[in-house]
Length: 91
Image 1 (cartoon, rainbow, N blue to C red):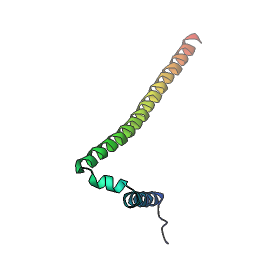
Image 2: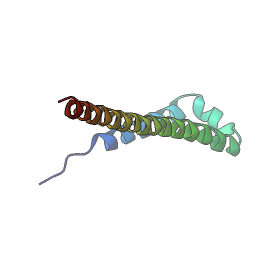
Image 3: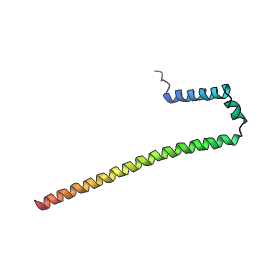
Image 4: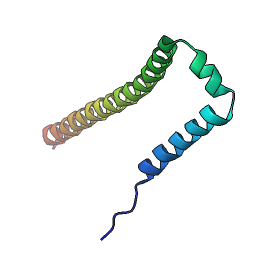
């Protein structure tokens, strides 16, 4: 049975083709080839930093939401226990 190519692979291939087109058919290629090599590292660092900031921000938000839900469940459990205790002491 043949496996279908994944969407990720198709997206990567499309990105490579787009970059190849931009480098060969536009003035952008000339501009990039005339730029100092360290500029590429700076741009890559900025992009990576932005990606990691978003990634860890979302992860932190999920963790915080789980903690809030857990604390809410503990609070509701304590309320139920207190209601049961009052019912027993009244009745």
